Length: 378
Image (cartoon, rainbow, N blue to C red; front, top):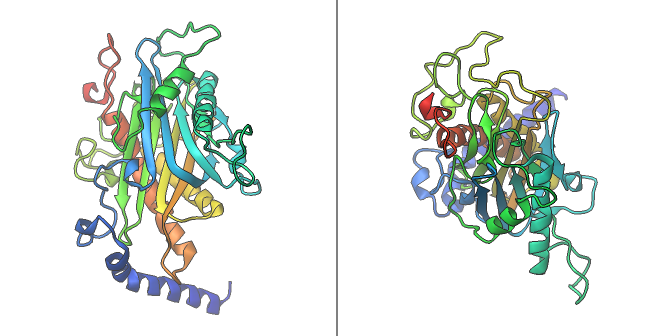
């Protein structure tokens, strides 16, 4: 890159910074209260459903100690995925590769149950297809079903003590349909949905979510099921690694004073983790219209949030996966440098995902009959 190119890029960035307040005034809708404080404040619910166009439904089975979370898009939404862990369990993720045909998804499913949980994606595909939703060439023709696009990822919770003697009829299909039929903008955190059977290192894991409204008015959200081998808290206490990103005491308000560790100290990590038994699965979303390649970049950047909140992450025995979805409800400002705005969204997605991870563990409760495993007990 030559000197003229560098100066030109700096000029574009400087011009964007100078126009940001104007963009906020002209495009911010329903979030005026965040203008004076600047970008990055949570949305009204501090959930991924603050992103216009998304709803979430959940179901769980206490006896099985597992569950399913369905993120349903109001309309087909552009999506991408980034896989960093060494032991993923996934369905329909290859369809999101940029060289492939289909650009959009109808739903994303996060599930417990490892490979058995992938059947939850089959259930949601059938459920959406019965409603006439899904990909097809041209207008719908009677007798020819649509093909709903439902990428699905599962975490490993098979060894958590629940009753897994389900034979040839795993419970994930029924839980998935129950979750889909209960979608809403409000949903439970902690020991719920895909996070019901999860562990986070040696602590009880869970389902977390968070959101942020940028100064431009764009919203970024995250939802995550935390089942990590690594620790979400620093050694010697219960301070979350994500503490620097906490807003308004949303996961305990302990501050970041307790954050310190030697290079080989992980805190409350899972002892002797085994390959394929630990996975943190997440979705980040924005209402800004992005291409699939841009969604891919946001998913890649959002993985940094996982690394900020879990030590270690992306290990050989993890199956860490992050999706990104654009609901396409808000267009980028005319003439704005897209790459810089995508970078802003990706950086915000990383912060929001870190917060969501901590919130999921902070809100987790013990399973029935179990004591002493949650963050509050620690």
